[in-house]
Amino acid sequence: MSRLHDLYLDRALEGPLALETFIDQILQGSFGPVSADEVYSFLDQVEQDMLQNIQIKAQELPLYAASLGDAEARVREQVEALRNRVRRRLEG
Image (cartoon, rainbow, N blue to C red; front, top):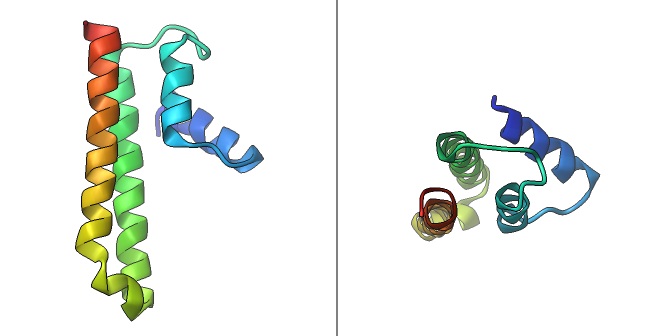
């Protein structure tokens, strides 16, 4: 796991933390300097975690299996929007 991933998990354990909020904190420099690649790697990890959780829930409950494709698409869209935000701020 990456430093950012560890920080995100630690903060999420303290209470609800939207991924968008955490990305904003990163971009504001709250965790020190970061490279675009470091943030992209973090987002890749989070996306993988989220998609894996969706798969597990779909296996556990048929109700979730019916909306599996939609849930996965929403995650991919959310993460891609965050990648674009990072791209504009750190590579812009």
